Amino acid sequence: MFWGKFLKRFATACVAVVLAVGATGCGGNSSGETFLNIATGGTAGTYYPIGGAIADVITKNVKDIGASAQSTGASVANINMLNEKQVDMAIVQNDIAYYAINGTEMFEKKVSGLRGIASLYPETCQIVTLDGSGIHSIADLRGKRVAVGAAGSGVEGNMRQILKAYGMTYKDINAQFLSFAEAATALKDGTVDAACVVAGYPTASVQDIASKKQIRLLPLDSEKVDSLIAEYPFYTRTSIPANTYQGFSAEVPTVSVMAILVTTDRMDEQVGYNVTKAIFDNVDKLEASHAAAKSIKKETALNGMNFIKMNEGAEKFLKE
Image (cartoon, rainbow, N blue to C red; front, side, top):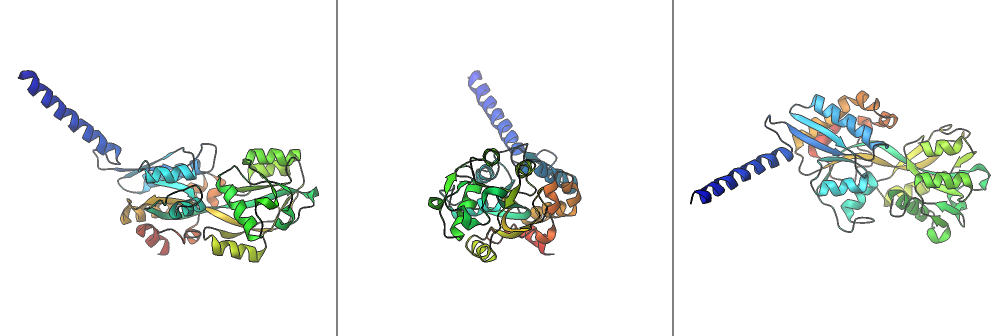
């Protein structure tokens, strides 16, 4: 009898402890502070330092909210982590968010509940060749060996869409499914004729090629850019300035996808407002984290966001 009552009381106490721990792990603690976990990317990339700076300004400027950034597998992994309630916010490419919302490309099912906070900075489609290749336009890629990005990657999707705008498919080129690093090496070694890179410019891998070889960036015709934006609303019109890369003095019209900050419908309006205000009131702190953060501006914070429902508080602040 004694042991039966003891075990019952012990089990009840254990349940109470588990519930208390669970409450702390879900974003709260005994002081009432809420914690926001921000999914970023690899520690050597751009998302991680910028995400860390965003977490820092939120923690220092929003009452009763703490935030931390965690290293992840970047955009696709981040969408899945948001969907599985493992994180509260994430930095992702807007084309990946578009695929998730619509259940296309690498997402077999639609991901519901995603909400936008702000567009951060452009990640630009840069199609690179060597000056002596004889390639001067996208149309000239027919029959050429082209590094189109790793299989199933966002880059590979971007290149496929650009080719489509020119009435081409992978059947018209010799597609090589290579990562950034592999593509840069292949271009320098002459085993591919051109390569697609999607990243903020200047991009280190392209700078490395330009330091050893004379490069050329391929422009996108204005009407092709219009057709891309009409079909894929995550694209934005971009020009890569002249002399961005050593030895190449032409301005290059192209398109960009955007690195965007997203959350879910679990974040309420007031928290969304306060978080967004903290970010854009402290852009100078973000700029110190990475060069790409210099493009983070309130006036461009809705660029490339027209396909995603915004957190009401974030939208309110950005439109004030």
